[in-house]
Image: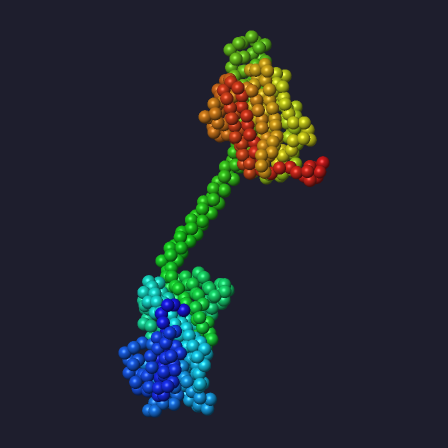
Length: 508
């Protein structure tokens, strides 16, 4: 209770009762007294009070009649009735017509009466606070730029604000008099979604499609909050509505554009796939058909070399050797192209692969000179990777052949193959101490027909590293290279995944 003194008006036609009341309560309350109902009404017209107490039996106007008049004109004022035990009918009238807070029997007890007055004042204060809150809510309700509606759990509109009228294009009295189904598209489905989205007393971000006065659709996002109960006990919900028609239209346009783009991409992809398949088939056919005449040219050039040597014709021997060298290089190029085409169309079949064992097989099968090199390889059975075994052999064959080629000018050549675990990946390193390369040009290494060294110095077709790069892509991995001119090169092969003990047992 705040510091404001409770203002009490006591009405009784007996002066002794008035004197006793003033004596008992003048210190606690701001007490006023009158001797009749008419005099009390005249006082109330000029003065506001919190609590009115009236005796029942008074000349001219009974207490119940007086309190009924107070209720009609000053409804926020709390009302109490003083009566005897036998005045039950007066109490009933005071309750029905005067809306009294309580009644007190005579003779009254000061402690009990003081408690009743304080309780009545609390009721008065709560009523005033509720009215102030309702007034503030009403101001916000009407001033809101967003549409707000009050509806009960049966789907009946109880109130709408001005913004809601403007959104739907109908005045309040029309909206409240008609069924809500006139404003909400597919009401049963909307109610079902409301029940599904309800969390306690709130239904948040519910998609709702409304209809305006002309029947045009309005896409909205609604948040419903339980704010109380109706007189019938139904839940009373406040619905805050956002018009998202423009956003929905933009989303539909974007979706339509994306669908059209997806369709075009699918068409272009299909066309490109067909073109690539045709190109692959054409390349394979051309390369395959080229190989046979090239082998004939090579064989014939070898024969010409021998015949030129027998006749002692140096010019003829030189020309024949040049033809032989060119045809040999073309055969190597065709073989690499065929290998690239087969690898590009081949599916990856992953198994547990022994890097040390495959590296030794590659070295044993090479036709290149290896006497000048010291190899440092993993011991068989100690370094594993989860990959396609045949493809890994192609990768290591190309990298080791490169390392042999670019270290042949060194007497102390060293080629290393190492395997390490990096997080969830397995990394295979192939290192050499050969001629190396400029790191600023390492991106050119993996392109088709790209070369960093002259053909006259180091032979090659420029396809090997492109093939290695493609194989690593098919594995979902990667390859990168580091080099230092005159000091060597290191290739990093990253394979996704690691080989665990269970996989090793299965492999064994």
